[in-house]
View 1 (cartoon, rainbow, N blue to C red):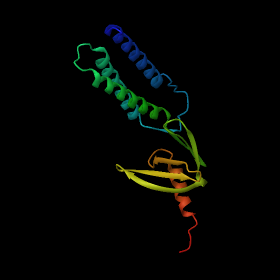
View 2: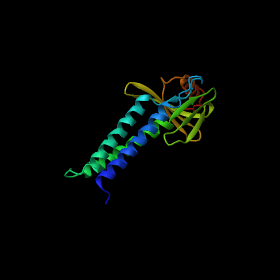
View 3: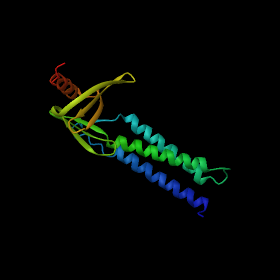
Length: 175
């Protein structure tokens, strides 16, 4: 078995390295001379939620693995593993997900990093959904690619207009 003191030092060092890498990745690449990124990303609150989950995972792991005077550390160990996985998934979603509207197509990346594109002329169906007071547009292309996006997001007016145009030009079967 590893002595508790060594385990505490290793966990603290891992947490410190993780926090430094996280802070550098969010704030280290700032270049004000660059033009503004036209991609629509998830809100910054998603990154903050991921950071809170990861900090809670570190605290729970320190309690579960480092504290020798606990009666039953297993719940803290399980909680730390769950919080770590959920925090990393939320951070992955924040890092990967974006939508880039263009003149004739919309390019987007999924949460797991797959980059996809829907040309406006390939839209076969669309619908709008109200979620918590915000209107979402769900667009499906001819190859089955689906995109869900808030209609109020910046730059989405072209996609909304193309979806409306695709339904206006659709050929209707006679009754």
